[in-house]
Image (cartoon, one colour):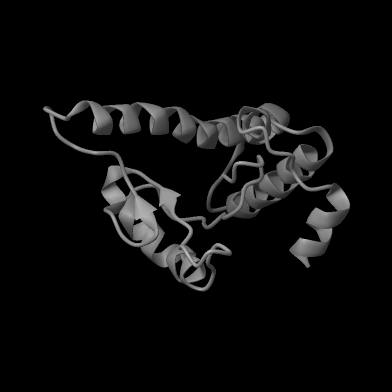
Amino acid sequence: MAPNGLIAHLYGPLEGKRHDAFMLGVSGLLPQLERITKPDGEPYVVYGDPAYGISRHIIAPFRGAHLTPLPQQFNSDMSKVRASVEWGFGKISQYFAYLDFHKNLKVLLQPVGKYYAVRALLANCHTCLYGSVTSSFFELEPPSLEVYSIVQK
């Protein structure tokens, strides 16, 4: 989830028993991040689950029972930011609830992964037109639908 409210990287489907670190490894996200940098040369980073570990492109919460105030504050601030990912999932479920009915989806008989990808694309289009909780939280306008459609080509 990007701060402008768009789902910036979607990968899958993978079976649910796979570990998050495995999914990160096969998703291709890290090589994509290696190819781009900010204008000042600094790398882009993703705030992730502690299971991902820490690398040049991934930061995670500080661990430990006896953290000093600064790491505690960092963890507190970042947990609020991390909630924005859940807002994206919530938007998809809210606007496409018919696909959230588990008894209606048959994993081996229907292209469930494609259904989700289409929902994410349409949710991004909705965000371009109307904004989102995430874009409001970060005070960042999503692109227009026209700009988004050009980038997707």
